[in-house]
View 1 (tube, one colour):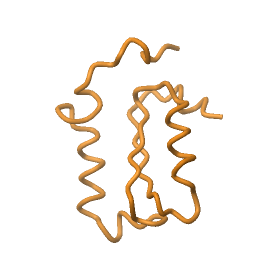
View 2 (view 1 turned 90 degrees about the vertical axis):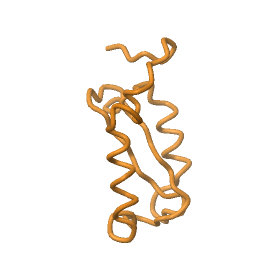
View 3 (view 1 turned 135 degrees about the horizontal axis):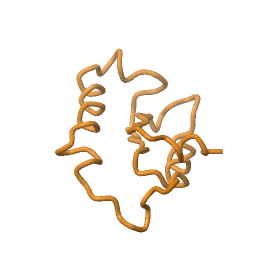
View 4 (view 1 turned 135 degrees about the vertical axis):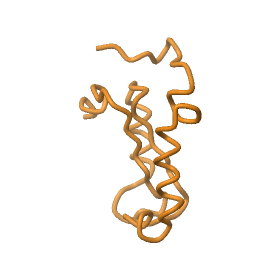
Length: 88
């Protein structure tokens, strides 16, 4: 159930690897697809394993997070389409 994600009032980005041996990337994609909250998104990268981003590609990992929150390039830069506007 993604009820908490539907109600998340702050931006949330999930950084996930396609080659994560513990969590299937397709499950993450499906979860985001079923979450009609524009504050919630995911970035699925081709590599990184499980928790491999921060220690092994620190600059890249943090650039993804920082760019997500940048009002010029992140989700706040794009208007929310009326068809997915989040309602309580």
